[in-house]
Image (cartoon, rainbow, N blue to C red):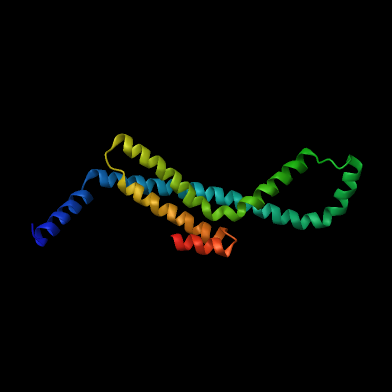
Length: 163
């Protein structure tokens, strides 16, 4: 077998793969998964943004109302009302989750691509393209964690070196 026959056989395999219906099903599954992940991530990010905005606006109001709350806590024995507890919980969740907002889309798409792999494995023979995209997605997730979330420079450099 010479080089021309080998190259021709590789081109035939690529042509058969790209023109197969299973390949197009995988492309459709990837596009659908990414669209659903994008819509869900956008809705979650919007909600996290609202929590963060509520927290920053309440911080400004809290300075002017601090004396009133101190007087109220003296009267009630330092206990919070249900509404105050709910607001405190909302502020705490907002302040903890707002920095993680960049991870929402890659994490959701990785999970949904995992579901797509399971479905394609159950009903069709091929899922290699979805697994490839999922692998790139995990690399993107690791890169975002290393560059935007990690606070230690050593951890950032190590993660980028490993990638």
